[in-house]
Amino acid sequence: MPPQDLARIDMTRIDFINQLYGQHAGDSELKRAQRFKARFMNTTMKVTLLGAAASDALESGQVVSGVGGQYNFVAMAHALPDARSILMLRATHDNADGLHSSIVWNYGHVTIPRHLRDIVITEYGVDTLAGLHSMYTDMWSEEYQCAWLDMYHRVFDRVSAVVGEQVWNFADFATSQGILRVGGNKKGIFTRDRKPKSAAFLLQKRWTGMNFGEKPQQGGRQ
Image 1 (cartoon, rainbow, N blue to C red):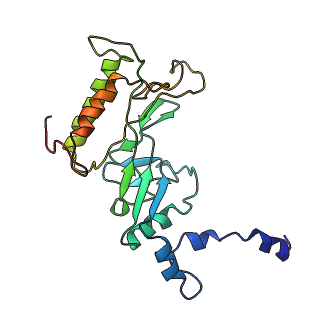
Image 2 (cartoon, one colour; image 1 turned 90 degrees about the horizontal axis):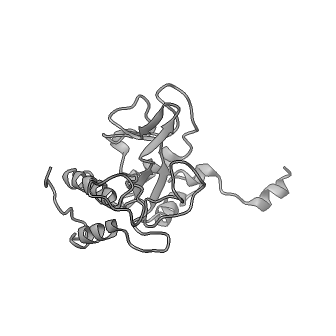
């Protein structure tokens, strides 16, 4: 591309974005000022219970993608006193041999080591058909959704590393057709027309009883 055309694009080099230092005097100071209370958010494929993350390759050696700037952003979050690094992942994933958890005890490949892990965000929730009720918490019933969320919450309250929660999802939404979904994604606490399911009242009771920034039952019931 001719230099005059290249100059018109005026794109910032990725190595300038990914680093706190720069080529010119004052670059580092400017970047630190611009990234006040910065939040660096990246996705990952697997996370161990100790906090290590695998984002670019599998333990078999198969490379899925490049690391990109993920490590740089994690490092910047630690270098800046008021910044945070956030890694996000799906709770489960599908392989040829079925459904697997993306949160594992140990994994044979690491992109972000556990000592650099800051915040990890994943999802929790369960599909529920509004209006379907059962005495025995059968699958798809509103009682099943409440029992499932209650089980998660009891675990959250016992584990000090869990510092926040946001159920998936706020409301049901449309998806492509499939044999595992009846009329879209039904994991919502509300229906598509914003009518509350039973779980909405369970969450209302739980969340209104919390003091902001505090866990409700630290070391609570088993």
